[in-house]
Image (tube, rainbow, N blue to C red; front, side):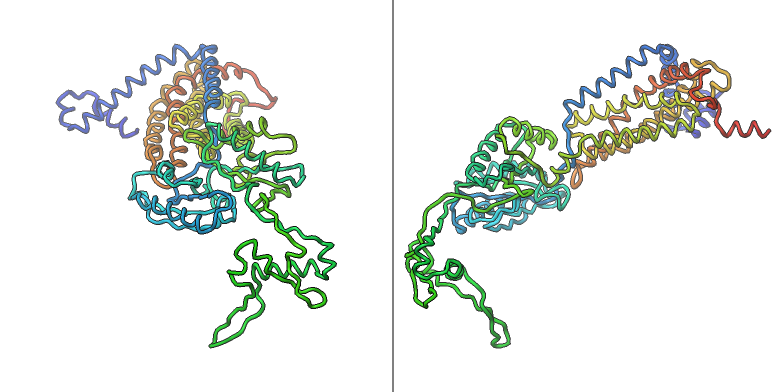
Length: 569
């Protein structure tokens, strides 16, 4: 700026010929300098007309405060957004009772579908386990889908998931869901939300828990905020129950414990011992051959030794009954639970998804049933108003620093009251860009307090100096705005220009970068363009309130350093 002022001084008294000798760069700087002076003159004229209109100033601030409340109602809330990490989980669930071979075949079908997309490099599959709720069973499967680097593909992970969901409809008799890894490694198995449906009755009635889970999942499926709903819990797995007649077993001299241990060895297996041969250790397992334990009817051909050494058939004191029940029992905080995984629908944030689940739970769950959260959803559901409290602490800290700087309790309020203008701009830009008010946005807002406060301090500090020199409050406010207009506009727009790459960020971490950049750009743009008109009026308002008044007996209008110098002289 000093260079521009020096260059402008060199033009005084020079003609058009001198301007042309400066070349195109000199001409541009000359025109630019004159344009800035013209804008500053217009700005000074406007400020001179509105600075003393206190009602207008408060109405403008009140309008922006109301705008913050209105935009915040429609602005999605979130915690930590999901980023494209170059990997996708494909969860496969076949009908209950499906064999492991059948599930594995479906995993291979999904692999073939994935290999048709150029954005996917490799797919690894495992049958018998699903990574979301750590469910184990013959009808569960997981595919780990690895994507190409960002520079080698045009589609994001979310777009690839949408395409896989469309192509996955070709795989018959299977339920497919796709999820991204969690935003923070270790907080859950996948991105989205993790909720647990709890049976707090402790009745042990898993059939009732299954019915409640089905109704709850059906109600969640009707909500537009949710997608990809998945649970491995089901109470209709086909099973066989072994029913033992204890009286008959005792009559035949069979110990129930020995009978169960023997059955687990025969049908399952046990490691007895090992031996070393050819320099290698071999383990010895005991179990029946597969052809003797293939069907339920094979139990009639199994025997157990009684206490007299006689072989007693299991069929003489045991029978098999077909049942439907749980594949595995899961508990959360000691309560029987049905783990549920899902993700926010496109256009909705995790905060809106959590709010929708809570509403559905309040409307549909019977007495004795409740929900709880896990993974990142646990921390997000308990975050509460922590961000608001942190923001208030930051504002109070800035206020106390300014109190010490201005030696006044009222003048710093002019700086703080100007902040709603920039905050409204941040929320408005976040909504316009389709982003959420998450952790990254809150970091941007805290940074914005210092940046917008700096603009207000530049004007108010100079106005205070002019006021101490004897000028009127109105004139001091006008001069403060006029002389600080150019540095405020240049530094603010230079900062905004530096944030453009963040607003347009792509690749890994793009959402976080875009959120921080959008928050800062929106706040600085609106806070600068409107704030330069509002801040002089706020100075006039609070300077009028504090003029000749002291909130404490020893309060001074001059800095402590100046009082010390005057006292020593």
